[in-house]
Length: 261
Image (tube, rainbow, N blue to C red; front, side, top):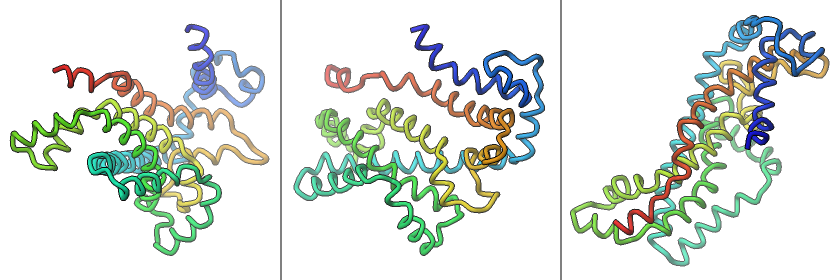
């Protein structure tokens, strides 16, 4: 476990340490510790890419997309599971079929459609596109989880006076906390770190996300590694904190205790 931990933490170590080095120090030895803690790279990145602004863009896009994906996927999966039939089956497999289509084949039609709908260079347009690409996986995971939730729990709540919305929000959603946390982590990591979709959807500097803004340090003839690593460190910290807070919910069981209770 120590060896595996060191293996996975090594790239993180290189990224953080390189942010304190000059370009010459990185070229001489990427492994070595810096001679001194020089915050110049971080200060430069903060000003050049206007980090507070791009951070807010990434935060708005990620939070809004994940929340919408969770709510729509959970509600859709609940209806598809609790109302079995040919229509539900067709809808379920139609949504899942989109997962097998490579994104590269959809890029040109996506840009054309987004342009026609005036969604290009807007955060809400990017959020809608993320919802479209994120719902299939979330629906698949919710669908499998809800099938394991006893229907008797919902029937007991209905006997006590809960309506459909009460059953969903007060009974089912709390039970789905483990799978919800797992989906939230997977989609947060994907959306926060995604570069390609913002690249084709966003054009103005004011709407750039962190990965898109950080790309200015990588070029054909110029690679500013110190600044790039500082920018990547800024991008890594929020998502690492989020993962550490949420990871405990992934391993929690829920249905066994509910049935036995």
